[in-house]
Image (cartoon, rainbow, N blue to C red):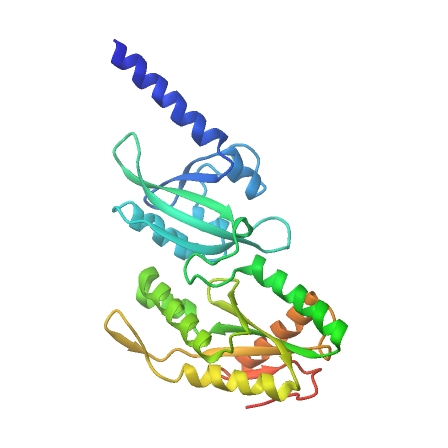
Length: 292
């Protein structure tokens, strides 16, 4: 019949859209197993044709449980969007914007579509509205140029939420997303207008102080941020104590290039989380080695 012909043509068009779209797209069962992956998804994760079929989507990203939970929720009609990092064969992390929404599979088993885009397609974090890694890199490079030209200092801070995986397990995706929004707002309220706050990972935030007189200025701001997190965070009718650990690197003491400063801030953050959870630490090469 004419209807059958039109229906078959529509299916062919939809199949072509799925196959040819440059957006990485996965069709998943309720349990997160991948039924089908388009070529863009295979290219994104460095897989051969057909290699993703049957694989758990949670194994593709750093926050796999978050993605698995989102797929299960989508099977019940929910939609969600968040950021993750790809687990690929090369070493460099790849930030991704992930959108999960309901799909109906032929056998009537509810499933989900997962669409994944490189975060650098835009400049804002989808969850918090903060600058993302792409915009942060641009601002750090501009700050580096100005600091070299005018011989002034600046600070780069890496901060993350202590025990965030446990918080996520207790509250689920909706609760943990709300916590991240509240944390972002509290940090933002502690900053000057000239400072930049970015979100570059699930619970990883970066603060750029573009001009400081000494490491004491960075320590003062870190104190303000830590103090801003002292009040309980109220989410899903619960009051939670949420703490940040912060690592600080100072230009030029702790590095004269963006990657060097980021590595120094990461090292300081690891030390802060190891010994001073809920507080901060400056990179050991700076002129103010430690502040509490």
